[in-house]
Image (cartoon, rainbow over all chains, first blue to last red; front, side):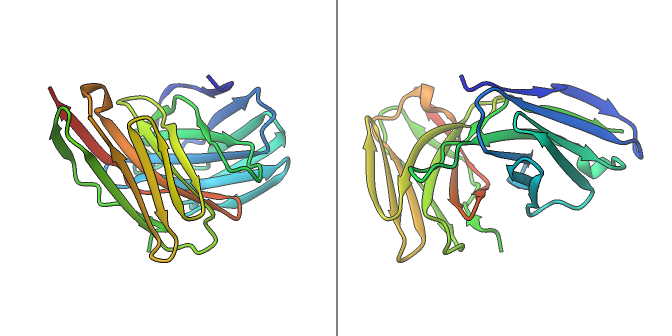
Length: 114
Length: 109
């Protein structure tokens, strides 16, 4: 299995509190992604990173921020959690080589905002 | 409009049947196309990927891409109960990896 770890795996938090999810990789892959997965919506891209300190928004970035100060870590922050952000969050990594891209996913973080 | 469209309807088939899954995409920058399989409460795992148009076969699985019509297909031959999972199509280009909503497939013994 690709060396990718998400933490925490489960979290319950209150509306209005900030929350940070961590994705850690040991593969030295250049690309890292944060997705959320909800019934009826599938996987939706929140933010992605194509290098240290290089990030860009995905299709559902409102209310989320990210940081990547090291190759191995990609943090997702919910600035002020809302119930609509209750979801399963997946981190993915990819080498993004010209040969193609094989994205490896973490096991997910189940976040509940009450 | 989502970059990758996949009708999320569930699909039930008897064991041994051919499973056919389809997606369309809108982003002309996509060069690589993937199919992921996701078991319940697990992260998606890459099943197959194809570069540009064409077919790719891997055992019982065949992936097809038609860039002229922006159409992606996955066929599973001789389906097995262990193939029961959600299948997600994806396109990659310009650093972006976008997914369809996924199809839940149930193979009935």
